[in-house]
Length: 102
Image 1 (spheres, rainbow, N blue to C red):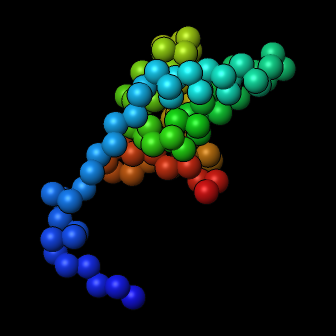
Image 2 (image 1 turned 135 degrees about the vertical axis):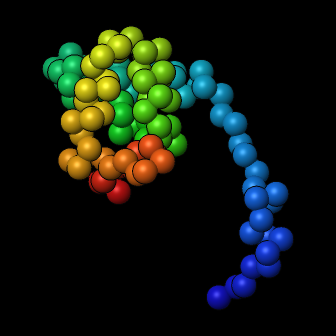
């Protein structure tokens, strides 16, 4: 086991990598397009939410913003996000969602 020094663990050593949001949106749009018309709107919203969480988009406001950019109705994704707590994902005290499937 390797011991880290305090300097290696400090916040100053953290590097934040910013992703291009248009690339993320494009990838999510392509994923949704591949689902086909047989997938209903509730399942589409759940799949989008899980994909967002998997991509590091973990707060409700971030998920809502992406959903809106992809054409989801303003009220639908918040309802699905709330209904999925404990079934598909969890949310911590800070408001970060985590997928329960892995």
